[in-house]
Amino acid sequence: MMAAATPWDALLRCSRPTAQFNRGAEPATPRPKTKVARVRELLRQNGEMSAASICMEVEYPNTGLLALSLKHDIAMGRFIFSDGLYSVNLGYDADLHLKIKRAKALLCRHGYTVVRPWL
Image (cartoon, rainbow, N blue to C red):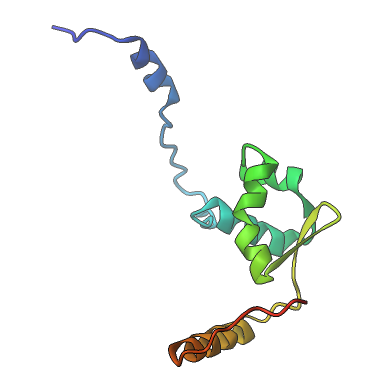
């Protein structure tokens, strides 16, 4: 006895990805897990890129979502958006920012208010 088919059954059968195994082929390089991580890696490898080219590479639906995804990285100084191009900030020092973050936490614990200076 067959179960009653719904209109969604055909769609689900067509949309499920099938596993493809290449035995004997070289193992593929692992891709970063999130789209934001893939964008970061892409910018580190290629340098300056436009939002449209990044969206095509990483499969973002639109450039607004890309800008929203990189908003924190741009605010932290890791990346720069200038003249319509995203690029890696070569002057970014992760150790320095970690020390600043720890110093801010120490001052806040002792009752001080820390504000970001205007640049």
